[in-house]
Image 1: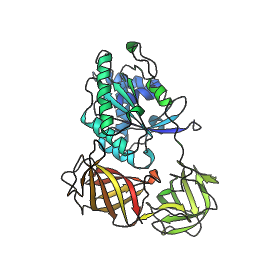
Image 2: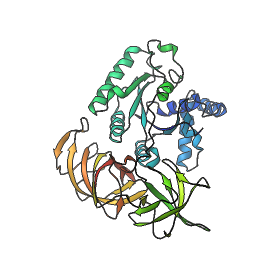
Image 3: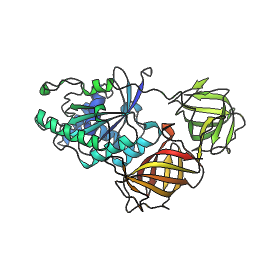
Image 4: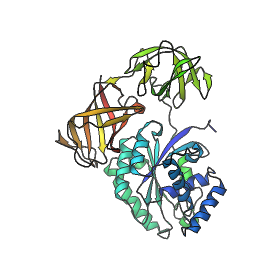
Length: 420
């Protein structure tokens, strides 16, 4: 299984446009959900007089289980095509979407945008597309869904396609890189097989498009960066920091430093899935022991890197952010919590440098007094305690963050430059 390259796929789009059904259908068509589970949901759906909602049910039940904290076999979130195995960064609600998309594992490489044929571009469609662009999604596949509802009309498809293309141009998403497919997630048209209902369409199906995505290049040539999730004491070994290798290669015998704690030493052992390994690379979750580093020397949120090129620690940093929701306005002096990789640090808005036009990305106003929901801006942030973070142009994996306050995600951003 694991010898196929891995892709993270975000499924984005407005709330009732059929994302859940599409995800359910993809998992079903690729054999990632056994037939009997679908049957079970089909019966359940029929009893509730919601016949045909079985695919959405599959996804919603998973979502509910997730909310109740029941752990779900990762298989439900992954599916295989001939060429790749995909992890779905499922994006049910806006808040989860942003948090998922920004924190660590779900740096989606590509996105599948779902737009309902009977509704066209809706407010959330806009927001999601802008976010996708800000967060550096490379390829966009656009599924014009619910074609069964509009009697598989080619004209309706063309209208919606044009609407979406205009939106992509507005947010400067290279629309040549977008692939459009008319689909019905509900009926299964153009998902894994070409639909007889739309003989006018000769492009690839959804699964073919996913297979044709460019292969991600693993960030092994970047310097080593491992954000630390936890630090354990294990008898017989000693102190074991645990984290996911985001970039570079970790080898036994390497000299490493943890920032901002500024502790370091030589890597004695590396363990992965309870087995000792000589080295680990991007995407590997590892526990490792470093000579001379004790449990109280390092903590969650530290980043491990090579001793000769340690992770940078920001005194202040400049970032581009998108404000998604805020009850009032954001001004200089506002101090929310920044979630970057495994770190959570309160940061003060030192200055709001520029307000950007979210449609074009161009500067709309220099040094504005405030920004509010829907605005994009360049800001300078000052962490209240040391924070290790990197410019996203250099190490993208450590260059994105979410801004949270009052229990919700206020904004998403990426780091432009770090002042050490």
